[in-house]
Image (cartoon, rainbow over all chains, first blue to last red; front, side, top):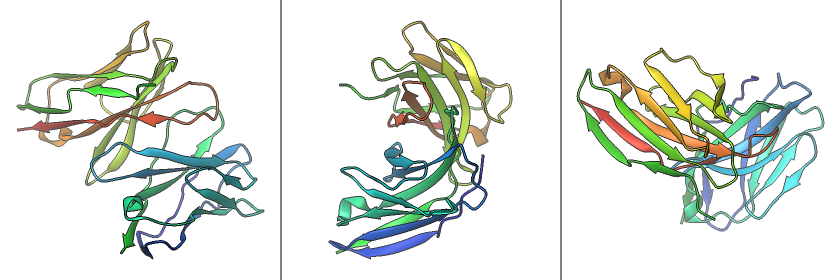
Length: 110
Length: 113
C-alpha cells in the first residue's frame, strides 16, 4: 500500500473551515483515498473516500489533485466535536485492510 | 440499524493467560477485520475474515488468531499473553466487496499485568 504523509497537528477556530492536507505521491491508479477520524478512546469513524473526482457528503468534502498525489479533507464549519485524529489512508481496490499512519491531530478552538 | 458490537469493553489478564474477544458485525456485513492500537505502534491490521475464511493477515505472531462463524460474528484469541499485548483491540465490519467503507466498534481495552 502507498504511504501517506500528514502534518502531525493542526488547530482550527470553531465555525471556520478545517482543511487537512495529505500527501500520497506514490499512489497507484487503482488506489482510493480514504479518510477516517478517531475521537479519543473511540473506534475510528469513516468520513469519506474518493478515487480521482472530488467528493462531498454530509460530513466533509474531499478534494483530490489532478495528478492524485495529494488531497485535502475539508470540514466546512468545524465544531468542538470535530476535535480528533484524522487519518488519510490509501487503499488498493479490492483490499479490505486499512493501513493507518500517524494522522493529524485536529484541535478545534472555541 | 445496530452498529458493530465488541465484548467485553474492558479486560484485565495476567501474563501467560489467553484471552478471547468477540465482535458482532453490522447485520448483512460479511467481512470482519481486527486491529490493534497501542501508543507506540498506532493502529495495526491483524487479520480479516470473509465468509468464515481468513482473507488477509497482518504481521503478527501466531499467538494471535481468529475465526468467523456462519452468522459473520468473529472472535479473536491471543494466547500466552505478554505485557506488550496491552492495547485497544478494534473490530471493523464491511459488506466485503471492493471499495466499501468499514465501520468500527468501540473496541476492547485489554490490560495485561
